[in-house]
Image 1: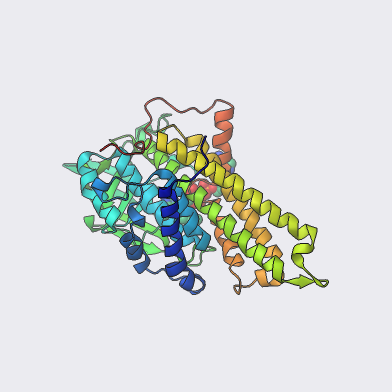
Image 2: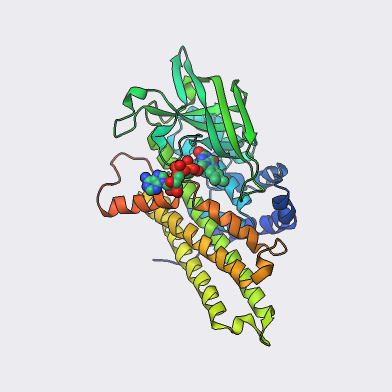
Length: 401
Ligand SMILES: Cc1cc2nc3c(=O)[nH]c(=O)nc-3n(C[C@H](O)[C@H](O)[C@H](O)COP(=O)(O)OP(=O)(O)OC[C@H]3O[C@@H](n4cnc5c(N)ncnc54)[C@H](O)[C@@H]3O)c2cc1C
């Protein structure tokens, strides 16, 4: 077992850290306060290669491994959650599914556009009446000559207003609703310009305010047959694969958020004085900081292990879900304690910890709630759940030439 990061990993850390420090940090307090999404950040991310990190060079990617993706997410969310969400959605929920499940035609058409930022990807599973319960979706895909007509409404979709390519899940055979393999659902690659696609923003969010979250409406949208991703009836499997990658980026991002809480709290505790000593001298304050550090180490080890499994092509649903559950729970706890360490100042936006507190809450909801992660763990423990043979993992790293 080797706990040493490689030169490649350290280069990716530097790249993401410098980007976040230079481009996000100076604007984030105001952007968050005004709930303003800056589209140019996506272009900046594309320019330095962040949008194509872990794809082979033949598709315009950076060729780095999946651990590097996690490390980049940690660095981005150290500064702000909304920046990390871009990688979760664009890479985790759109690019990597196409890379793994796509036909040669889909890969050669879409991956170069995604890695270069020529297209921004989004993932449309959730609907107004269906989140955790995926088979509750209502979006329908009717077979017509040469393709499908899609109708439905997707809700809570990250980057919906900014994206050009949507991975949409819809029923192709409702009669299979009660089949255990959920083979009535299919995934479709829907371009914004296909017709009948409209998007909008959700206002008044608790967190991720500098990011876009919205809805997608599909009104008689024709999707050609060649844009089915992963084959007809495999949509549920594709969606679960997507979540294995997205959850990994949420876990690694939440780890960065814990580190941000920890650093801010250490600095504040060493400067703020009560009873003639810095508050860092009080053992109850020390306890909060010690717990933040423990949360960081636990979360980091869990996501790095999941990333290592991804590199090797080892089934990692359980490991990834555990990393996501624990990192997000630890991020919520760390952010709550970081506000506490800051006292009344933590309650105002003069310090960033109130933003961390609001953003941390979201991570225990999206990409499968905390409760769903617990059910996954229990399912594996109690043998209700197992990794079925024939499931797809990410292409192993290093990529074959
Ligand atoms: C900021 C943000 C960004 C998002 N981005 C995307 C995106 O890009 N694409 C996308 O498709 N979706 C996205 N989502 C949606 C997100 O994935 C869903 O909100 C999430 O899956 C939960 O679904 P829900 O909100 O419908 O809650 P529900 O499923 O209605 O759950 C409500 C509550 O009941 C609990 N619950 C539900 N079922 C069970 C059960 N069986 N046992 C115990 N407890 C249960 C849940 O844990 C939760 O506490 C986003 C959400 C947010 C907040």
